[in-house]
Structure formats: structure tokens, C-alpha cells
Length: 134
Image 1 (spheres, rainbow, N blue to C red):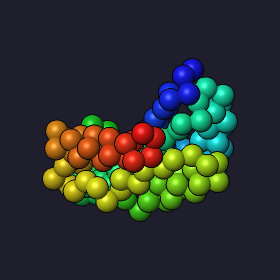
Image 2 (image 1 turned 90 degrees about the vertical axis):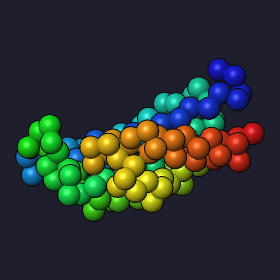
Image 3 (image 1 turned 30 degrees about the vertical axis):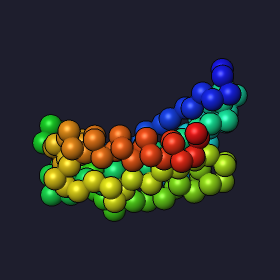
């Protein structure tokens, strides 16, 4: 791959979900999975960026409207976001924290960004890429 190939990941929020009262992916497994992913992708590029996790509207996603057994909570998301940030620091990988970027008005269903949420994310990511990689 080209030396300027930038690999961007925006993953992890589904790992923080609670299904039937239990973690979807326990945080230790989440950590191991992210480390393995970083090690594999570093073979292709040294320009790697992880986008942090976004907040949710707790009132609308405990449970989610499409499945009574699935819940998200900012309390859990914060733990996974901090772990992701720590891993990125340990592995010398870029991390963009966006947890406080969106408001609940920017969430379509309490979880997924709406048009304004996506616009805010896009602008923040572009700004970060320009500052760090170009």
C-alpha cells in the first residue's frame, strides 16, 4: 500500500451493548480484539486512526426500539471508549475522541447519528485528518 494510505476504524459501540443483561463483548475480549486488529493492519499502513465511540440517548436505548433484549448506556460506552483510547496510546495509533461531539438532537433513534450528527462527525474527522496526516 501507498505510504499515505490511511486506515480508519469506527468500531466498538456494538461491543459495549448489553444483551439479555450481559455484555455483548467483555472489555478484556474487546481489548484483545482491538490489539489483534492493530497488529494485523500495521502490516499495510502506519497511518491508522480510530474514531472514538459516540454517546447515546440513554432514555431511548434502554432498551432499543427494535429489540427489547438489547440496551446501550453511556456508562458502558465510556468504559469501552476509554479502553480504546488507552490501547491506541499504547500502540502509537491515532485516536479521535468524539464522545462529547454529538448531542441527543444529533441522534436519529437514540443510537445512530442523523444528518446533522453525520455532518458534525465528518467535519471533525476531516479536520483531524488534515491536522495529523497532511
